[in-house]
Image (cartoon, rainbow, N blue to C red; front, side, top):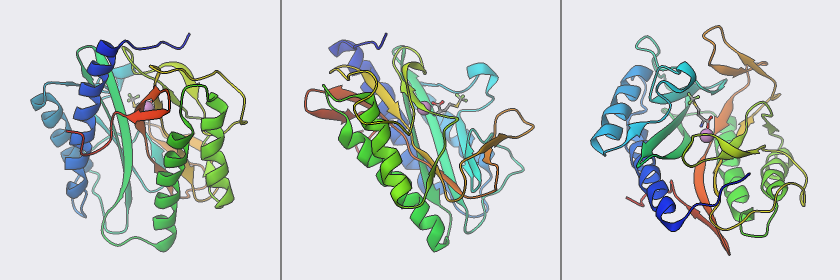
Length: 252
Ligand code: MF3
Ligand code: CO
C-alpha cells in the first residue's frame, strides 16, 4: 500500500527534507581536492543535529555514517573514511537522509571537485536533468511507470546507462516505503499516483555499462566496468497538478 500523508505529516516531511537540503548545500563548497570523505561526514552529522534532526542513514542496516560519499566509478553507498581524499577531477556524489518529528527526508547530488572532463560534466548534467524529467512526470493521476520511463528515455537517448539494481522509493515514517521506483519502465504502467504520496526519486546513471559490483566493505556499489557514475535524488510530495520538491535547495 502506498501511504497518503496528512497535511500535518507533510509538514514534518518538509522539516526533515529542509534539513537535508540545507546540509547538502553547505557541503557542496567543502568538496575540494584534499578534503577527506570522513571530514565531509563529520560536518554533515554536526549540522543535521544542530538543525534539530537526526541522521537517517547512521545505523540503518548497520551503515556506519551520516553521509554516503561515492566518488567516480562508485555509484552509491560509499562509506566515508579519514583515509579517502577527494582529488582534482573527481565527481563526488553526496547522499544524505535526516529524520525530524519521526519523518524522513532523503536527497543526493553529484558535484565536481576542481576541473572535470567533458564526459564527466555531461554525465552529471544528464543525470541531473533525468531527475528533472522524472519530477516533471509526477502529478496525481500519472502512473509510476511514466516517472520511471522519463528517466530511462532521457538517459538512454543521450547514451547513458541506467543502474537497475537500485531504485527510488516511497518515504515517510520510514526511509524506504512502497513503492519501489525503478529508473526504467513503461509509460502507463504501475500504480496511479495520488496527491499526498511522498516519493524519493533517485536516478543513478553510468557512462559505460550499468552493471554493479558491491565492494568487500559490503556497501560501496561500483560500476563493474569502472565507468563513471552520477546520482541525483529529491524527496517530493505528489500534488494535484505536479509535485512539491521537499528537498529543494533554498527552501530553508
Ligand atoms: N538514498 C539511499 C537510499 O534511499 C541511501 C541509503 S544509504 C543507507 O537507499 F545507508 F541508508 F543504506
Ligand atoms: Co533514497
